[in-house]
Every structure is written in C-alpha cells, then in structure tokens.
Length: 120
Image (cartoon, rainbow, N blue to C red; front, side, top):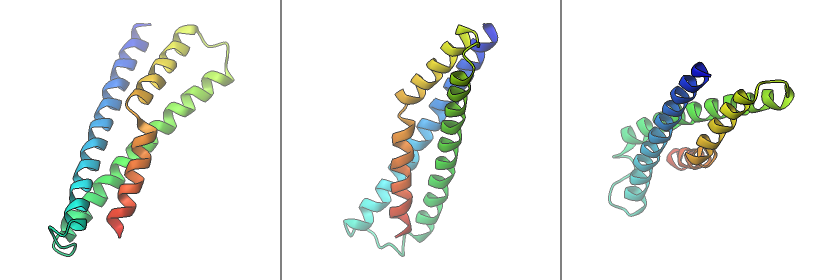
C-alpha cells in the first residue's frame, strides 16, 4: 500500500504540473490573440511569439493527452480485471478524480482551440 500511496502522490504532482503548464500556455496564447484582435499589435510583429506559443501549446497538448490516455488505460485495466485488490481500484479512482478535478479533458479542448486560433 505504501508503494501505491507514493505513486499516487507522484502522479498527483505530475498532474498538477501539467495543469499549471496548460493554464500558462492558454493564458499566453489568449493574451497574444487578444492583442491581435484588439488591434494593439500586428500579427506579423508577433510572428515569433506565435510560433513559440504554438510549440508550447502543442507540447502541452501532447503531455495532457498522453497522461489522459494513460489514466483511461489504467481504468480500462481495472474494469477488465475485477480480481485486482480494492486498494488498486481505490488508487485508480483517486487518480481519475484528481485528473477530473484539474479539468484535463477541458484543458485538452481549450488548448486544441487555442492552437487552431494561433495558426490563423
């Protein structure tokens, strides 16, 4: 059980880190888009920023999607193997709840949209 608890803490830190990075990527991209749409800055003048932000958003998206897929795989394994100990099920349920709390699926959608907008 100690190993599961340590792993859960480690995964929670990882999830929190990705959620913070997603927030940062989104806010940076949002600021750039607002500056362009409000006519404060020219899109061509921000070309380097846009390319950098696109790369950050895509990297963040990849990270979010991969951890989200990993969690879904873990949950699927849990469903496929009901003989697993309750503590493992609790671990996975806690991890999924924590991921939902950090709004991973929503962040993925937001960052996909942000990436699309930055490409225009």
